[in-house]
Amino acid sequence: MKLKGLAAATSILALTLTLGACGGSDSDKSTLQKAIDDGKITVGFAGEAPYSFEEGGELQGASVSLAKAVFKELGVDDVEGVNTEFGSLIPGLNADRFDAISAGMSILPDRCEQAAFGDPEFMYTTALMTKEGKLDGMKNLDDVKDKGVKLATMTGAIESDYAKDLGIETQQVGTPQDGMDAVTTGRADVFALTAISLNWMAKNNADAGVEVSESFVQEIDGVPQVGAGATVFRTDDEELRDEWNKGLDKIISDEDAYLDAVGDYGFTAEERPDGSITTDQLCKGELPTADS
Image (cartoon, rainbow, N blue to C red; front, side, top):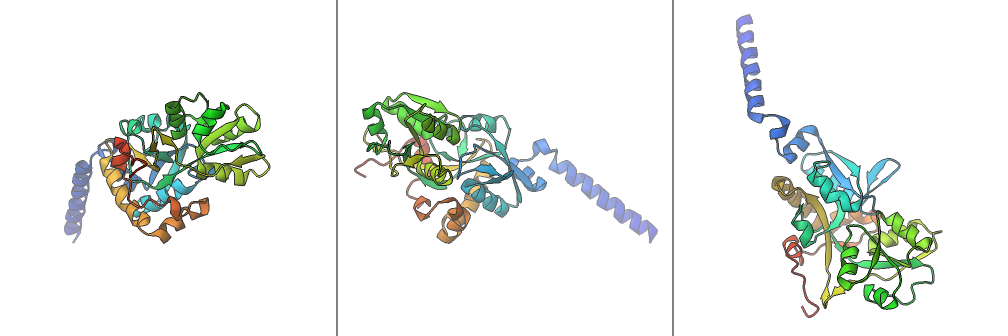
């Protein structure tokens, strides 16, 4: 009996060593497999409420809520955040500071050359923030240009690209809070950002003395700049991105599941992607024209 037990134990040890050898070191594992084995994954975020931000030391927001739901579906229970300025997110991802970007980042052709975007998670519109009573009829960035007022935009954000395309000189800020501060202190007359973000800030800073315009889709050369945000991965993490898209689709395709994940952060069914715009189209810059 003792010999049989010893033989069995030896066989188990040999099998374990063989599997270990086949599995290789952590450096040989894919990002997804390592995350599953570790039970955790790190995401970069930019402190832009209500997409991803820290409150009370806890990582939260609509992008984070989706991330937690999808990664749990993939067998990863713990999502840890690394706070990074928006313009440094893709460089940080490619420098392996974190495994994915969870910041509601707009899908743009130049960004697609640097990283791999998942499927759309949010459809975007833009808005303008000014001091109370100072909106002065401005409804879009064309009006901002016509009035010649001082505009602030966030470094790396889509609104900075809009302003550049329209020939508007901007004051660059690092965070949404910096943008609102620029307006309240008079260093800027207008701050342009996604409507969801500005409305969230105004609602949660009732004493700031700011107002937010109606949301709009900016046109550049007659083309409506339809926007969508997504989670971002390194270009060589195709396995992780593809599995992410499968898990995300289960939530996006179910309106109730989508609102369960993001509704607490001010998102509605209007922001839920309907499949009419794909990541591939946005990466190629194939936006619908005003006539389509």
